[in-house]
Length: 433
Image (tube, helix red, strand yellow):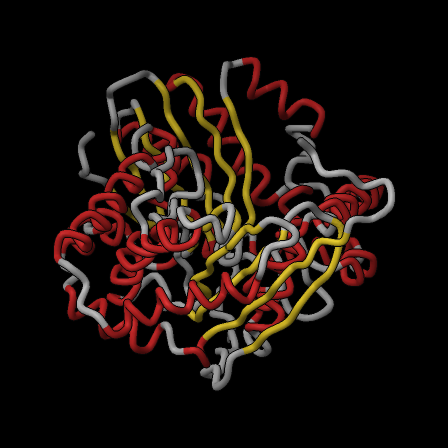
């Protein structure tokens, strides 16, 4: 696949990234809005995700019940996602149907109806989704970790929001949020596939240029102070496994340290799938934590996770144990492995293997046209497309000294939050075989 892209900005502020890929006659279009749970204040937690749901309820031109049929009829697929820093919608469909995708997204950027009846029906759907999530041990544990790790920054809550806020928000508040954030100056359009750039540019101008923009004053997001001491808590609830989540404060994606962290994450627990969309997986059997914890039957599994975010977020590890296992022993062995990283020089061949595995994971998340369109918009949220294009080179530039320096700061005990979920066997609750 060729790496040349064309970028430009419409007069109303929409940033456009185009990449011609003529391997198959399809096109993938993604429209990104710089709005997610990071933009939510108390009283409005979960509003970004709820508005995303409401964008599928239709406009006068594209009524909700017809939207899915319209895309399916031409052999396309579509969906949406809300995250910490962004909300995105995509359509991947035959190249000849790109006008449909362009018209649909331009229309719902400005003409979504927000019918009161639909809003109340979707309120029930989102609240049910939240209640279902709260029955999942890892959701409860992760939500508690975020709330404990952040007290100033809005990364303190999960994307789906809180029951209290979801019950209280009104139609006018939802619509005002949509009007404020779903506008040209806050949008990125990324398209990859089988098209002619000159022709597609004219189409984009036709559909999107008439949309009026609003002033787009950057929001003041309060930054979280440096954490000064370790935080620990315990949760009890239904389940068949004991979980330990260890979360360290992590650097933002648009920093050199993030690439060092990517290598360190790969070395310790196997590489994280940054793409969040499609791609394959890499075995973490050669990672240090797997060998120290899983191979020695102290835990059932171990996984790490880093995320590319605008502001510093979290580098987390999940240890899964049998219900009656010794959580303190697992933590002790985990800490011993961290101490080794802090005190001993990492062999060059181990660093090389960690980089190769991170490269492979990155390649799996970049292998098709939909992934390519994803990366153009995604990287533009927290950095720019050059971040994606130079990702491999940035990994290869990581040195043992870089890792050692990061480890001294990143894995300081005061820089982490630890949560333990203890399962309680409720009457009538049986473990699955």
